[in-house]
Length: 239
Ligand SMILES: [Fe+2]
Picture 1 (tube, rainbow, N blue to C red):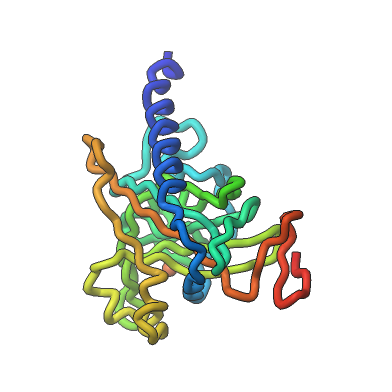
Picture 2 (cartoon, rainbow, N blue to C red):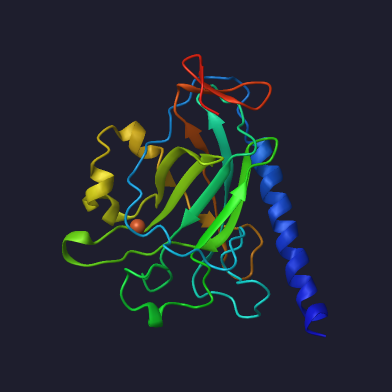
């Protein structure tokens, strides 16, 4: 009974995922112009010290729970590319972020008992043959106070196996607090700053006010993917 009640939701979610991935493909630029690598940002202290039981790419629903996380539902998608524009397949994209109240899933973050137990807080996804990834999560919120106050952001890590290729964060474009954020200010070049800003816009046709953001992750210019899927940096295999 409950399963059949859930079915429309699940198939609708799958349809959204399909349409977003399709749109992502269409966004591939025609020319293989060299692209600026996504600026790296620090990992921070709150990569989960104990991963949640569910680590899939849907952070809104834990396992088969019926209660979704609180927050503005956001469909985050994009591709992992080399600076030459080649897709990087079979790389792991991880994200982690605070819940709607600004609390991380981490024993070192206070008020764990107040944390939204329905929010998965962390997820991972293996890119497909076109380098695409997809997550359903919540729009990030600001957290902290005093010196460690942070502008809203989603932590992102990209790895090939256990080799970390990129550690960065995704900020919400247009948020005033970005300009006073300690870590964002470390990125001096406005063009590099733009590589960590995402446009969160309304998901067309959503009656629930869902958002979407498309954000490509460009892996530094020394990394290239070979035909056999291995990675090479300056002629040296790092895979
Ligand atoms: Fe953070």
